[in-house]
Image (cartoon, rainbow, N blue to C red; front, side, top):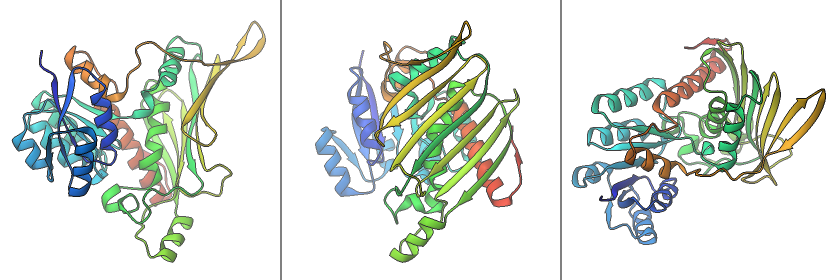
Length: 346
């Protein structure tokens, strides 16, 4: 059987997509596209990709592709995903799924209409540790989960300051839509995506805005956002995200779940991108802690998972429906932050 032919649009985050596909024996990255001709040439040479395009439209027109990854600034997720789907490709789209829930639904509806898959790269699911936590939660070890707190704070970590990340027209928002989306999805995935009913949110931008003014940089999004989400089953999730906060750690990521039988925490170590996880339980009247030590057999990265699901005609995780729920919640947090009032969702 011939390998699945893959194209990648956007060569910032897209380089990670290329690596992921090239690690799968049944996938071949045959084309890449980026507006930046220098970056296109560098990435093409580094990864030995033969076909290189300065426009995604040209790539989709000239190449017969099975899979396309969309890894561009957020503004272009929806139009490029829809174009790739209409060109007959399955699509793996970077997070956030779109600029808002309305765009996300158009993407989902297009995928349904043309009969192609649409998966969202919620990459923090795709680790041995996260899958081990999922297995523990599915076993019922926590009981009924009624509260979660999920956080990504940076002391001063504004990506490419002055670039598209800080421009609402291109990004849709700041750290909430950039970082918070990861931690929110992880918590919701572990909780089996309960149905949200209302949201309360706040957003602030005093630190980054002042720095941007001083450095004459463009910046019109928040530098810190928080949200409280209430679900139909009574559970509550708090989400926090910042690029610029007066906290101790350079980078702090933590997701905590509290259940009727136990709790869990996953957090980064050394202010970096390695993680540890523990479970907190009660047995026969005794309290004890249990460190979680992966590996979990068969855990794949997002790209390999997507390829396998297509080849074996099995459902993929990180679905468009879950992406829409996340987008609706982000929309609601921003709306509540702007109005100062709770927002109904669902």
